[in-house]
Amino acid sequence: MCGRVYIKTSLEELVRNFAFAERGAIDALGNRFPRYNGAPTLDYPIIIRDVVREPDIMGPVFASARWGLMPAWMKPGGRPPPINARCEGISTNGLFRSTYRSRRCLVPINGFFEWKDIFGTGKNKQPYAIAMADGSPFALAGIWETRRENDIEIRSFAIVTCEPNEMMAQIHDRMPVILHREDYERWLSPEPDPTDLMKPFPAELMTMWPIGRNVGSPKNDTADIIDPIDPDPEPTLI
Image (cartoon, rainbow, N blue to C red; front, side):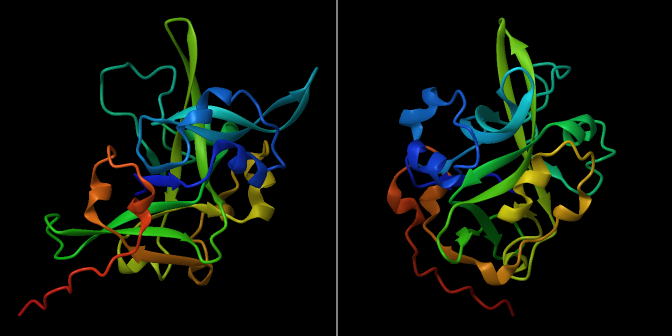
């Protein structure tokens, strides 16, 4: 799964790094970034396909969305909104099917976090930060929805996940779908089922490093969250 991300730049710099997209209505997000320990339920800049020039010129545009997919038909107060959508069966799963076919998005970030379950018991987990080897920002594949709450339109999203690459498999059995820049346009396009894009990103283009366990609380949101540490050696089980 993918349950935590980080954006280590200002909103303005993030927009410049994805300059192919129109700015859109994201000014309200301006003072919330950098965000070094981004959790679900918070609002993030995403890139969707929408009207960029009237009357009907469509293109990529930044928009604000809450992490945790809430379709219009989902009743508030029930089960938590899904933050991830497995690529296997996404085109047939009733929760994601129509969203995947017509409302895909890009989720621009600088990195994400994952936890290695050292003993397989869930009681001793070492967190890792994962990013591009060259330090560049990148985009995760997502899907988005809108609903009205108290006469206000709320946009929400989930991140698509896939099998891990060789690097990620060392710490977890899933990873988010990371898109190559040349595939951004296609992922945002009206094409109903770009199945072949939902695959592990090449491990040789990525890097990961152990970080401190204070990342476990979203209240800890400072730049040192992503500092590398020397983890405790993993004991050998006899």
